[in-house]
Image 1 (cartoon, rainbow, N blue to C red):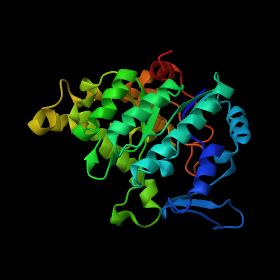
Image 2: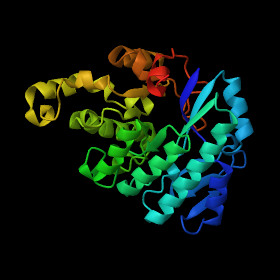
Image 3: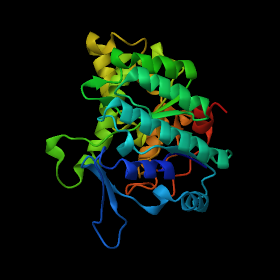
Length: 312
């Protein structure tokens, strides 16, 4: 079984954070004596730094124990560092990517990885993506946009041109939703995170960007958010409004089948619905391990999506 949505923080990355804690405002906070320290970057989106995040032997042991035969490791979104100066973003990206490249060489049959890139500067992001693929990574994990820029904006053209040339996997992972209405009952995570994916995925689909860059393999986290469930509404909008249909060569339901989606949905009926809507070869197993809301062990699913995504 594969796991296409799993996160790890290599030692070199952790050491860099400690050495540069004042620059990125990194804090390790003890919230509960029964838990590990929580890591905060710039006072945002803290998370418990559980041992499987940083202990590679434990991480691999737990993957094996869960019958995961191949894991695609991702950088954690808290360390994208998009809101820091470009030199900080580039330095973190290169350290993270080089560390992941080293890890996967230890077990190439069991591991692959996607790196991180400084998306706030698309030309540099393209350069770092090229470096990452050349050292053995499959592509990059990126956020759903930067400030007011959606991923379909021409602002990101240099990055997507390079991703298309490299036939890279681009794993689109949401950042924490900052809608002020959600600041209660863990809603920024519960519905805000999939909402961020929904907004991004809908924009990417309706923009027709996949026609312009057909070789990019886009993987959406958390089952594509709410978009697959609302594909009928997008289809009706396509029929009614030129603003919806003008960039598309086919109905939205057909574009839905040109992306990949993970199974981090915590509900078998939801997974079954997703497979029915997009096809078996477009859904891949994922866990979000070892974050709190991980599906662990990941749900068993056939390997058609994995082979299609990896090109094997």
